[in-house]
Image (cartoon, rainbow, N blue to C red; front, side, top):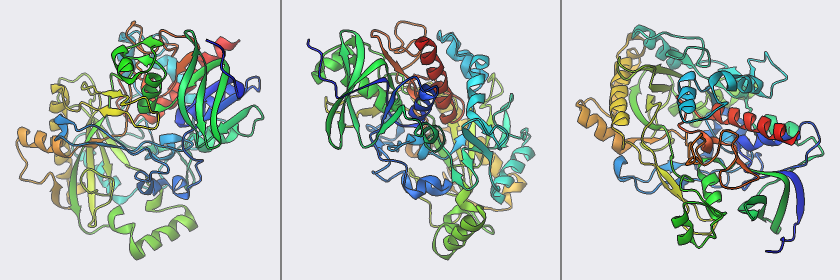
Length: 531
């Protein structure tokens, strides 16, 4: 096959301008020796709501900056199509998420080691976390601000007091050596503004002459010469482009789009590729399998006697909050998706905390992140280590058509048992004096929902994605894994994946920090091979 005409050549071609892509672009270009091109389907991160911490509530349904995926009807979740807003702009979901920064723990890294992920123990990845973090301004040469909340909402403080009253340890933070217990979250924020990877890593990388960024450009497919990835075909606003990578192609499109791109490029289940009419480069059945997510179920109380996000973010109250934010960088607009959490065991026999109960001084319309009209507070419950898995599979050979997402929630009995236990623990926390002072009535699921069977039915009918999708290009030491521990795609050469899709079984907390860590480690692996 004759070599295609190349419109451009670079050393590293990074496909996907989300959180991981921003990290990769910065680290790979840092010494000035390598030409790096970053390709992003969405626009630059200029929407002002991106930079206001609470602004994500306005963006998750905006098709300009969110992919707004919906799953296939999920039989185990009431036959519903589950919403998956994923970032579609520079910074990706790191410019759209709730800004919570939670490291992985030794527990999950032990599980990864059991799957053959050599070099990914907690002690081995800890230096990569540390190189990310500028915690409360103590490491100004590190790119990402990791900050305590400017101020905690009184209900969030009450939640932590309630956890203490229930016998849980109340800690200074969630990123220390011990996680069991309750603590306030840290945010990726500096002052009053979001500071995700686009505003930190990528901003400094774009000052370098060896970095280029294409926005509004869809990756159509990875291009191969024999088994070696040599570039990609792109659809830019000005037409189609073919870009050659002299060193490697790095896919960082996330847990939905990375497997989708591989499948449309000829790497995936052979039967699926034949059905799509895509020539097979490598028959890899694991591409798009092993989808994991935290299925989140809410327990909500109506509130009286104190302001919540619900009524403080509309009308004259919103004008007051805008003034507090603009003048002093304080108030409800500095909050993210959640403010504090408890990590607890679903039963005494669990070797470690297997539930996250996250608190928000707000309540939402069922199945959405749209605020209710009346004041409320919420505890979100999810099983930290879901055993249920799903798939992401291309529907057609058209890159513009979203893949079919089948999440498979609640198939595993461990997930069902843990969620029911978590709802009971959340309900108990609301009865503690610190929260009972403000609580007036349980609105979801309601006091009439008492039995395990009824609680499980409520969970199946009302749960939402925790937006922590991982695992669809699983890393492992076995031949069935999609990438090896160096993140090289098995069956081909010159192609790596570095995003949430490689995390083999997810993490107990939120997925953003582990994704950044994986991108930092991937950058080190790439640069070591370039020496």
